[in-house]
Length: 120
Image (cartoon, rainbow, N blue to C red):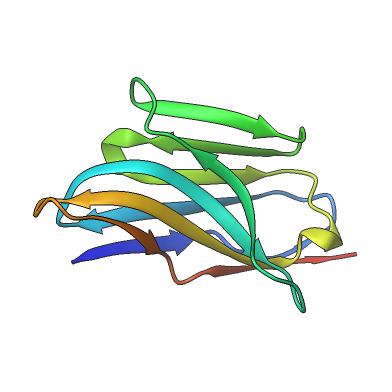
């Protein structure tokens, strides 16, 4: 069994920040690519950012100057730091991870999603 547990969503005002976390646990051999998707009301789910396992314990990429994706390989956790949030960032944010289990099976797993609501 593999589980992705997300946390960090909530209701904030425009200009504020949130940090989302997604931790993978269970019968894991290795966690490969990790990423965040989002689905805004009335829209299709879209890819926001991905990050590879990289070298070392963490890797980070800054997207569009406001958001940063990073990960801690030792904790099998991916983060998304979101600064200067705007109302158009309102969406359900879901974590996705490409995981190889201890049984040698490689699959894509999803978290349950966390709601981010930005008020103006």
